[in-house]
Amino acid sequence: MTHASRRRFLQSSAAGAALSAALPAQVQRPPSANDKLQVALIGCGGMGHADLQSSLATGQVEVVAAADVYQGRLDAMKEKYGQQVVTSRDYREVLARPDVDFVIVGTPDHWHQRISIDAMNAGKDVYVEKPMVQQIGEGKALIEAQQRTKRILQVGSQRVSSVVYAKAGELVRAGSIGKFNMIEAWWDRNSALGAWQYSIPHDATPENIDWDRFLGSAPKRPFEAMRLFRWRNYRDYGTGVTGDLFVHLFSGMHAITGAVGPTRIYATGGLRYWKDGRDVPDIMVGLFDYPETKNHPAFNLILRVNFVDGSGGSHTFRFIGDEGVLTVNPGDVTLARQPKETEPGHTIGTFAQATQEKFLAEYRKQYPPQRVTADAMRPKQMERYPQPPGYSDHRHHHEIFVNAVRTRTPVVEDAVFGFRAAGPALLCNQSYFDKKIINWDPVKMEIAG
Picture (cartoon, rainbow, N blue to C red):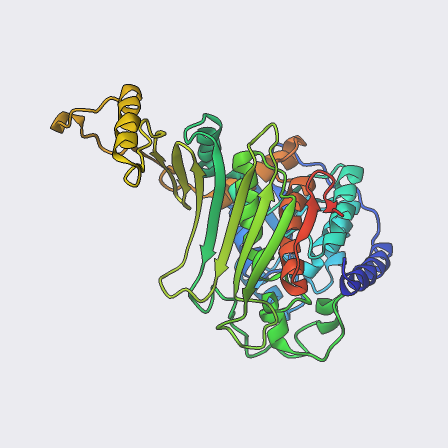
């Protein structure tokens, strides 16, 4: 870690220890197969609400409590879900309730680790938004907490549970594109909301916002509503495009390939368009080396996020193999098979005539000329696998989590999986700001060298 990140880590640890000391240990109400699981939403903004809606859509969950630093969102929770919903600006009051089975953590990134650990220590299962931590130094403590408390924790990168990504993994493992050697992925946006220009309410005042609680372990500063409602724009609270979007791409790619992480990381980019006071780039490109393992060959990964693209938003994967290309879109997988060339061709035009003739004689013995006919023309082999109508990977991700809470079975995107996706994403920020290549041990989950 850099000097600044070490200082932030120590500050976060000290603040976290003080908060944890104030939390009473609670015994969780045992979930029953005959009633609904009871959830508390901590962080009632856009992503928190989306997670809650997907959780409620399973038909097995009801919301009983909510915590947020902005009073307007707490009022909205009661308006939408009923006056019986208990609300508080202090998330610890929510964790102390014995009627809460699990929590959804939809706060700014700098609170993810602390609240998740406190929740598990209080006997709650946790659905935490990605990235599961804001700083590299926070990852192992969260893994330790999950393993020690034996709580269910699932990170909110829903493509890990997607049937589209499951199909892509099946095709890759079956050798449909041969040996893949490069993966490229991008997530482009060209809208103000896509670039985090979120709305700021007229009642965003110090009276309606617990500013000190929002800041938490972040540097102290005077009240500024924009920093709360557009927190992704600032390194103090968010993780930039890497923690918002690179981590989705890492998660999905790891789910498809079985990879655990790169060994070398380099990122570059810049702040080109959204010069609105933010201190994170709006264009970023990452280059990654993945070593050969029992699950996959060695390959290179290229990631891109672009908030300036004027051609329209999109997010896509391309797995490039020596026999085809697999393209993974939000709603389908397409496979274009390109068998290896049977005749390589030649470049003999600059040779002497006698040498050309001798070369061609040997060449035609190995590759006899093919008679050109209409019957020899074949369409390029293309296969498309669309997702089922009405399918939602977000809802499916929550269904898997809810089932795990009921049955106490492990989830795929636990703290270890989550950190192996978040770690390289966060290191892209370090590479970008420090202008250097980062070596990473994906097995030990720590900076190498």
